[in-house]
Length: 89
Image 1 (cartoon, rainbow, N blue to C red):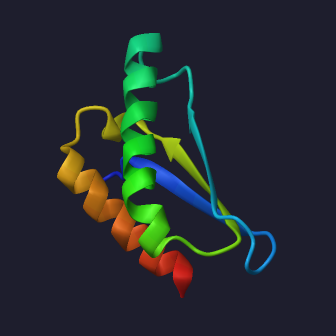
Image 2: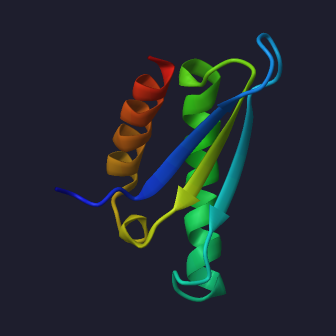
């Protein structure tokens, strides 16, 4: 089994409300440069996918994992698409 590059948590707030995103990467993962790069990648993914695949009125929290540091961006993109589809069910 492949370790995911991030964990997605979704919490429904109010239907029809704003779709929000939050990002976190723990200090266990590299130094500040590595953590900030991971957060930038997560923000780019959210900016691309949440408007079309996110759940309306929900908070989406992306928690970066060590496996996502060197993972190809296209792979992370596919993982987030899959995670959002699963959360929408």
